[in-house]
Amino acid sequence: MTVGVLGSGTVGQDVLNLIERRKPIFEDVGVKIEIAGVMVRDVNKKRNVPAGTRVTTDCDFLQECGVVIETIGGVDRPLDILRPYLRSDRPVITANKAMLAERWDELREYALDGKLYYEASVMAGTPVIGPMSTVLRASTFNKLQAVLNGTCNYILTQMEGGQDYAAALAGAQALGYAEDPPTLDVGGFDTAHKLAVLARFCADGNFPYSAVQVTGIENVTLADVQDASRNGEKIKLVAELERAGTGWKATVAPQRLPADHPLCTAGATRNALVYEGDECGTLIFAGGGAGGMITASAMVGDLLDYLLGFPGHVPLH
Ligand SMILES: NC(=O)c1ccc[n+]([C@@H]2O[C@H](COP(=O)([O-])OP(=O)(O)OC[C@H]3O[C@@H](n4cnc5c(N)ncnc54)[C@H](OP(=O)(O)O)[C@@H]3O)[C@@H](O)[C@H]2O)c1
Image 1 (tube, rainbow, N blue to C red):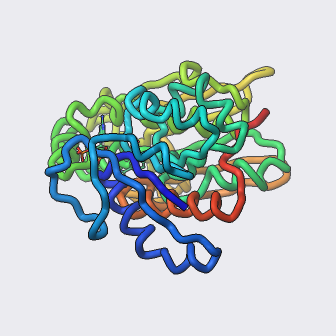
Image 2 (cartoon, helix red, strand yellow; image 1 turned 45 degrees about the vertical axis):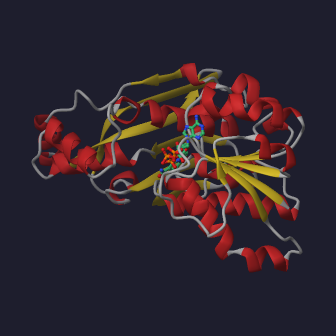
């Protein structure tokens, strides 16, 4: 199986290393993996990838690939590269929630066809899309609440320790958790991307990203966090999806929650999701939501699923 990889940053490097480490498992299922090429911007950058990996700025190798793993990020940039490849009916594995959320009009037909694998796009290596796209469909979905952005979680946790918003944000940036500018994270848009992706499995397969109402954490003050704390509560950036009349309401906004709520007890660096269905009851998913290797674990898991003949993540239809 000839595999192409787009991008070799935090996630891409660990995808390549994990594929190398798992070669015996692939051989157990009768497949020899070959990496056809790895597309990057700067070939001179030092990278931690298996010896002999072909790193290039050219995407010609896509022509010879049976499957492509996209780890470039962004919205139009990866799609422009992938478009001709996707049209040839071959599968893509991606962790790119921004592209999935914002270009669903174009990507949905490939997802319906089982050609898109994207477990890592929400909660990285903590599996939620897998169960939502399979077994949970037997149950009537009512509501979900989730903490899906580690940067906001870190900032709000630092504020619980007495830092004001600006100092907590600066600390997150110094540790490399928050981008500069940090709008995608603190503005709630990254969380909204992930909520739109999830909504397509449990509410409406066509759920548009534009339908998510988004408020970020920029206006949360230290006084707000301290007032919540005095009342036994914590402030979290919560993604919420629930029934509203005959449709669905999707919001991302800071919320005060009891300190013993599962979204508060999951931990400062972890993501969490509470899923409520009639028959399945209340389910809680929690685990790491960012980081190279944990994200790679879901992407290489998707690769194994593909090789075993499982379809990608098919939205409601
Ligand atoms: N990091 C995480 O914890 C995490 C978790 C879940 C999902 N994700 C998703 O995974 C994806 C990748 O994230 P990341 O953190 O690995 O990003 P990253 O560290 O910034 O890596 C991006 C890679 O893409 C390459 N690239 C960027 N623009 C390119 C272009 N125009 N042409 C060719 N190559 C290009 C870069 O090349 P150079 O190396 O030459 O600069 C780099 O290797 C994103 O969609 C992100 O949302 C990340």
